[in-house]
Length: 414
Image 1 (tube, one colour):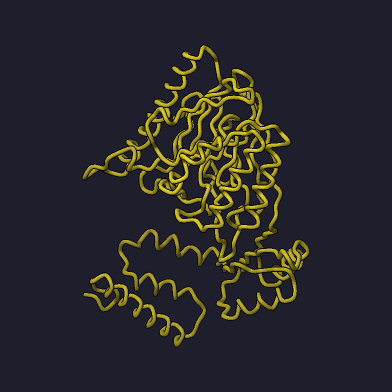
Image 2 (cartoon, helix red, strand yellow):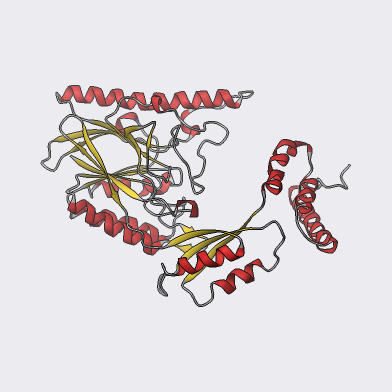
């Protein structure tokens, strides 16, 4: 059997106000071609089909059209929910899509529902799939008063481990009843220790569970992981894999080679995993340096774009001095060339960036106004500008305090 492991489509994502619809549609069209070319039996989407719990209508249409288009290839489709997906929304079409050879597992259900016997193209048993979606803490554990974060972390980790073990044992029993040593694979949408994150990846278990160790999973033949956008093996093991997102979802992903994974099994075990490189339909670059260096890099980046498909650019300016006309300078550098600057950032020197460390160490002892004052001290501006910003900040604090029915935590507070 052959399966395609993909995840983290994030259909409907808006990137600094820009729609990703053309890129996503190109990817889904390309994916159908790969299914046909490689005679894939099963397409497995390991979570985060959509970017938000309420995706735009065009994103839902793309998803539905893909399901329909896949039917002509003879391949089956299994979709598990991710942390970005709405369980209720995915569940709406579950019964309907089941008529189109598609299994949808939006969230945790009865244990038996998470075990799928996937046939090959001849209708014979091909493999057993432990299809587990993103697991929310409230679905697994009950918080108790006075319970510390370390205890919650341990309890949740054990609950996730137990859930995988439970479905694994069902798969083993099913294999015995069938009288065949079928391969057993599993899915997961979570962070596994040792995985490299990117800035577009939201932490899942904030304050309770940072990551699950690789040895927490039962000895499956293949673990198809989602949530991390960078393609990678986990703990150096070829059968524990993140396929990554098919398009760059943040600027720190632009240098990554995006891929889906072609996973091949014989009648009993994993044979090989091959990466199918996903084409890049939208040029994106991140440039960094002083203004002179940035001007040179922007000129090089412009060669990658066209009028119909300009390059999306992130600019990081290295400068300690305050440049109040930075936006205008960057706009001048990009006039008349196929570039769209989506984000401009300033990178301060090590001495200035040390402020962040200082504030983390003393934040509990400072009022919001004191934090703001320390930040202003790092800026090159005159006293009039400083006082004007401080006045606006105080007004903002008062507005927030009024809405919350409390007193502002500024210098005037006793």
